[in-house]
Image 1 (cartoon, rainbow, N blue to C red):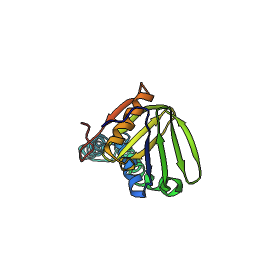
Image 2 (cartoon, rainbow, N blue to C red):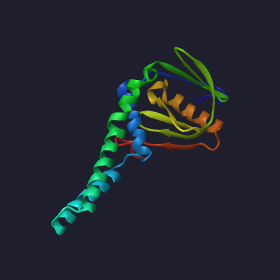
Image 3 (cartoon, one colour):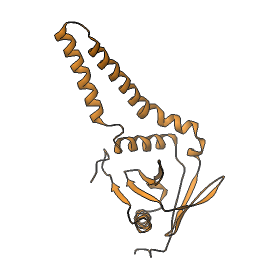
Image 4 (cartoon, helix red, strand yellow):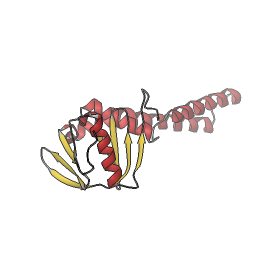
Length: 183
């Protein structure tokens, strides 16, 4: 039995460090800030640099430049994907505290141990992955909601319906499968 549209949906959760890191890494992959294409380009650049060195029988400025830029990009990728998500969670203790959301047709109520606030539905995009929702507002940034925060699949569907009704121009995407592939 489906719910009337005026009802509300509650979501309560507390993120662990591991969950937060998985969520951010998934976002980085899905937004193409980190991808297998970058790894392939780095491998090709290093391979071309090695081939040029062998053919020219010396290390030229161009070979050194390609090598240095490739190493810099690889280190930045390791920082962005491997190190930074955990550091953000460690530096912002509020990310690991319990939080509750109440979604209604009119607004979103957010409450944690210190504050309670009403937010407008100003979503531009809503992504649903295997484990998390990503809510993108008008400002930069996004909100992570674990799917487990909802009591049932019906609550998740109702939340999605509320978001679509409140934000008619909302772009909604769903990723499923073990690798998070889009279906």
